Length: 80
Image 1 (cartoon, rainbow, N blue to C red):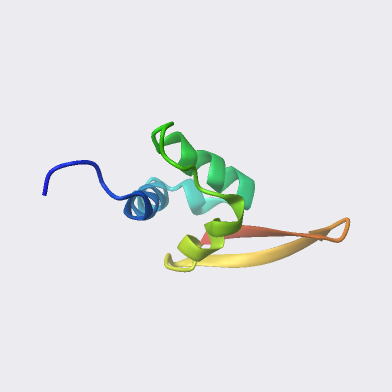
Image 2: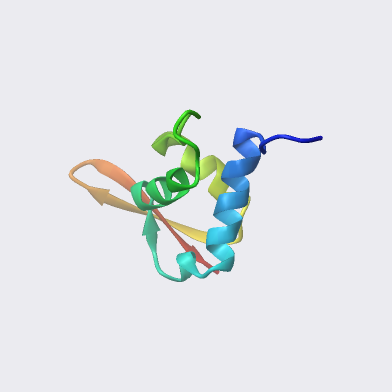
């Protein structure tokens, strides 16, 4: 089947490529991951939302931690 990859598959593909390249060797926050993934998504497509990052990250082998700053939870991920 010709044509571009579906949006959700593209998100997974980009995240796996980032993991393979060593991007997650350091702790990365949600906004950093979201910004990096959206660089690879075409402008006309819907960009990945911050609230959906965790859904795709739990499919990868990464460690998750939660930080609380001013009553706001910040998620961070690092490769196991």
